[in-house]
Length: 78
Image (tube, rainbow, N blue to C red; front, side, top):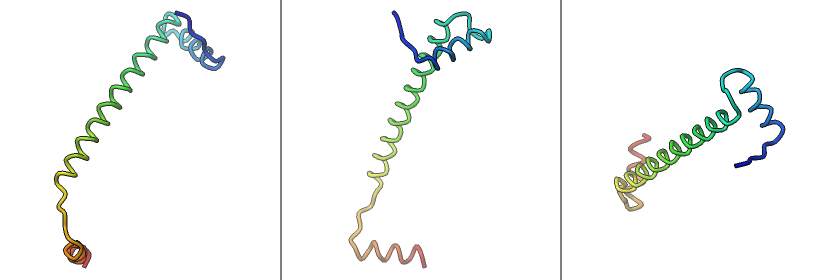
């Protein structure tokens, strides 16, 4: 597999290898892809939880007629 990087990204990868933290360009790229996969997984979990929370909120919502809603607000903020 061949990839093309911008000069800025290529320098970034080369700097990582030169720092001694990684032995090769491939190691840097693999680590970056693992981090991206992890971030995507976390984002997916957060969206799933948000959707559950929204559904729970909708299920807990009490529907009031207009006058009851006004009375509840007045009692809450008096």
